[in-house]
Image (cartoon, rainbow, N blue to C red):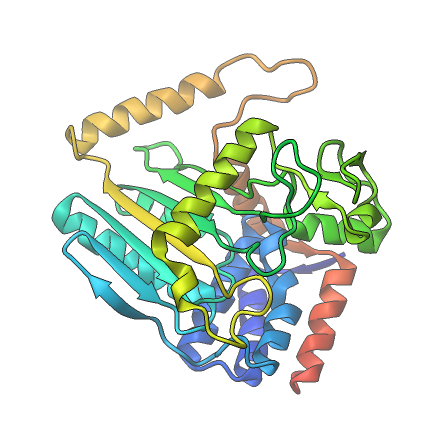
Length: 348
């Protein structure tokens, strides 16, 4: 296991992105996002993705120096093109736009089209919560070219991981936040298990005939991801598809050669709502804090150390990893080092 501080990781990632063709601003923002994801314990959305990003740049699927821009706008809404640059850059721009509009008009909705992978969605709803706003992110369209997930009750691929994130500010307590794929596992976890010869948890995938499996090899032999939570997860997967791809009109902004096999039809909807819309923020914060303390005070069930509020795991990971360093799996680090070398960056 390799251990790095967030600053070290940020610096190394930025060097690689600059060498791969990113400009200063895009490299800085993307490096910050990836390092923060690793710091938060969400290693599936950290430096694991660097080899994919560099390959996408080299294939001209991702334009590393492009900038997002507004396609259409009202006082409470906007549609943003990411101009096929790093999704982290486009998504931050869009959430900042939503926050600014919500500050003036109480609530705002911003859609994003034409952008690459936006990374850890929790980052953007935490931005809203830091401004005393409720933030939401819904993503869809990832299965239009190469679907990977079966609908509930089906045996063939037609959807994808379709992520959702919601963040709610508190007062003295931590932001209540959740961020997950609507599949039982993220694609990165399935790939890691396959490369490492590990089994998957039950109810994560089916094989090509629709039979339940824990062998990641069955997925790569034509199987499918499953929605989490059966029919309930499936309905949220569909909601993300509607709010992401269909609502934003992302299909109308597809460009040949851009976005690879996952992101050409990607549509993302972001929402920001003032938490003090119906009451003074102090009253909202008092009730939010009380609710968090109440759930944490519930005696743990057998096999659990305690009850957590959504977002506690990331907050605890950040505290621990700031103190002890960020652990990086050997295979992930090796892939990062090899990718860095491929663009002329030597990492000791």
